[in-house]
Every structure is written in C-alpha cells, then in structure tokens.
Image 1 (cartoon, one colour):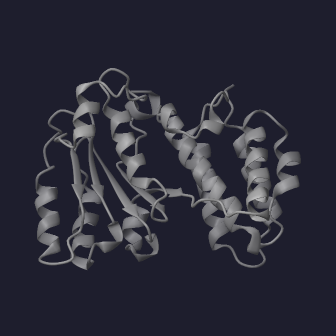
Image 2 (cartoon, helix red, strand yellow):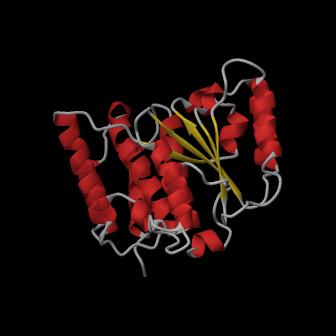
Amino acid sequence: MRHYITSGHLPQSLLFAGAAGSGKTRQAMDFFKSLNCIESPGSPCGRCAVCFKLRSGSHPDLVVFEPPVVGRQVDALREVLDGIRLRPFEARQRLVLIEPAEDLNKSSSNALLKALEEPPPATVFILISHNPALLLPTIVSRCQVLRFAPSAPAGEGAADLAEFRSAVREILAGGDPLALMAKVQPLDREELAGPLSVLDALLRDLWLLSCGAASLVAAELAGLDLRPDYYELDEIWQLLRGLRRGGENQNLKAAFAEIAIRLGRLRAA
C-alpha cells in the first residue's frame, strides 16, 4: 500500500455523507478493494481473491451492518462488534460498513462511539449517512468526514459550477490561484452551496489520492502532477467547515483566497 496507508495516516473511522444515490456505498466497496487488493494495492485489479470475494459478497473481512428497525438493535450491533475484536481473517484492513448510520438509536450510537474510541486492530469503520445532522455530534467528531456532492442542477447554475470547477482544476494544474479564484468565487452566502459541493467532492478525491487510491478519483484529476499533503487537506477541510458555519459578516473573499493558495500547494514539488 502507498505511503499514507502504510505510514499510519489512514483514519480508522470515516463518515461518507451525502444525498442518497450519490455513490457513497460503491465508493466504500471500491475503497476496501483498494486497501486490500493482492495484485495491485491502491488500484484494484478485479481478478485476485480479494476482488473476487468482494464481487461475490463473500469476503469475511467486509462487515456490513444495516441497523434493524425492530428488535433489540443494540444487541445486534454488539454482536457485530464482538466479532471484530481480533485481527482480520485475510485482509490487511477489515472494513465495517454501517448504513444508514442515522438509523442507529441512542443505545446503539453509544455502543458504536465506544468502539470508535477504542477501535479493533487493522479495522476501518465507514459510516454511510444521507443525513449526518441526525448523528451524535460525538460520533461525527471521531470521523474523517467526506461529503459526496449531489448532481449539479441544470441551466445557468450548472454553467457557473462548471466554470468554478474548471478554475479549481487550473489551480491544481499550476495556474495563478488568486487570479483564477477571484473570477469565480461566490459573492454572498446564497451562492455558497454549489462551490462548496464542488470542493467537497474534490477534497474527497484528493484524500483518496493521498492514500494511493488513484483509480477511484474523478477523471478531471487524471494527468495532474499532484502530491496531496495530509496537513494541507485537513486545513482546507477546516476552511470549508468554517464557511458552512460562518455568519453573515464572514469574509468570503479571504476564505476562498486561502483555499486557492492551499490548493496550489498540492502540486508535486
């Protein structure tokens, strides 16, 4: 596995957040293959035992938990958690997939929180949520959040988003960050949703790229000489988080300028 996986930078708990149908579950499955492919770690071959077992739904280290709506939900979750105390059977990294995570009740959420605080060895938790606002804040705080953007709207808004996306790609390709961002940045908070969804999807792909999963990223990043730095990605994520929570007096120009500068630093030296 590539540097950011083998060096311990792989988060043990992830939250894939976004509207239903935005590809979160497929991305989680592809990520498991990327982590564990025997022939081509980081770029699944589709032929080895890991890829074959995942395709047939029989891999013992892929654990899927769908919170039941009837019965003792917490007992069902505890049974899953008890079964992953030891190291994985075959894989380098076990994946525990919980979907939809917002269906966890209070007791189950508390049981999961304890597992996230004291994770089993060689195990990655991925929570799939269509509405992360319903999750316990303490669970969200334990996860690296990757937001999946909905499909862009048609018409003028779609054209504006395409222009913003193009400018961001030019920055990553070596263009002037401040000049390019100044042309496309939103002027008020009512225009924030589209650009933030573009940056969320981009940050998800850059994070996957930093983990060596180049085959899973968007085609528009192909051919760019990038070397995403974990620190810079985290700083960009904090800036996006601040933009979502910011008040009416927040300086959007300064925030997007800093994002542009940090995106420009992601090019390989």
